[in-house]
Image 1 (tube, helix red, strand yellow):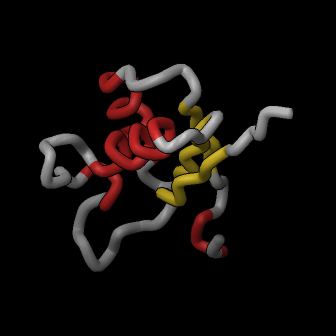
Image 2: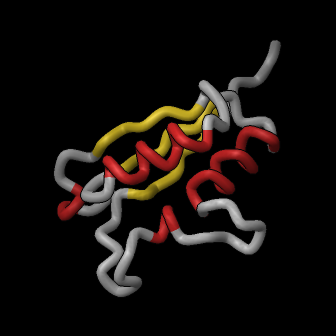
Length: 85
């Protein structure tokens, strides 16, 4: 039996201390963090990656659409991220 391994990226924070969403900061390889993290998870065997967004949903959605990394990456929007995980 094949194992189905999903992965979750928590990207719903407000990034108040950073000043900008951490998910769209540039990683050392030049890719944006959310793209790099999702790609590594898929390369590591994840069946799908769910990126949980919040306040910065639109910009993360745009970044992932522009990256066209894989159809197995999808978004889930937390409607009230101020309540925590």
